[in-house]
Length: 297
Image (cartoon, rainbow, N blue to C red; front, side, top):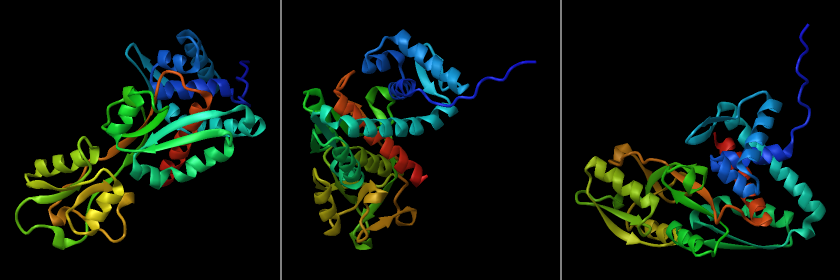
């Protein structure tokens, strides 16, 4: 009579950490570089995890590694496990984790989604100095290239794994102070950030596709400046739905505005390997935004 396979009781967190690294890098070699292991070791660890779970977590072909349905389901849980493990270890040996983490993010996303995450991180690792820079994606990418940042959240087109790990999708809407800002005829006045900006590109591309003329009425590097211009009735803008303040009106198809394609937020790293403190922050961000995205869905 055949014997049943022993039921898995405990997950191996080392294998879970490898799984997360591969899922984010979509490449065994890049994951190995992040963890300081060879490609063959990474491959063996993934194989061991799949044997333990009795499930395939990755689809592999010569050009790419992608998550299966089981892998997609496991990823947010795996990040949560690693975060809990790292918080416990940090609590026991917090004084051993010191140094500085230089982190960048767009102002609008930072003010909406990050305060709680960064506060949790600071409490978990009180001896790590956290330096936060809020700027446009273009500027953050420049600072990353110049070695001035360890981690950054950027706005991007859906371009794949070579430009960061997607952490968030943003639903964009048209907003303005009211109907009186819409011209009876003539181009639509737009309030935007400087080019290149994903929101600006979404707005102009959508209007071009509709054949509706537009003009740049006001440009500001900061979200606060754009919101002030919108409240003053200087024009309309494409912004994430969560950032459309109550005093602004959302415009839609009935107002002659087309639907806007979603934007993405991605987390990028300065190099193949990061200091432990920076990797801990990366997992705090990823696991927290996983949970927030699950709550929205």
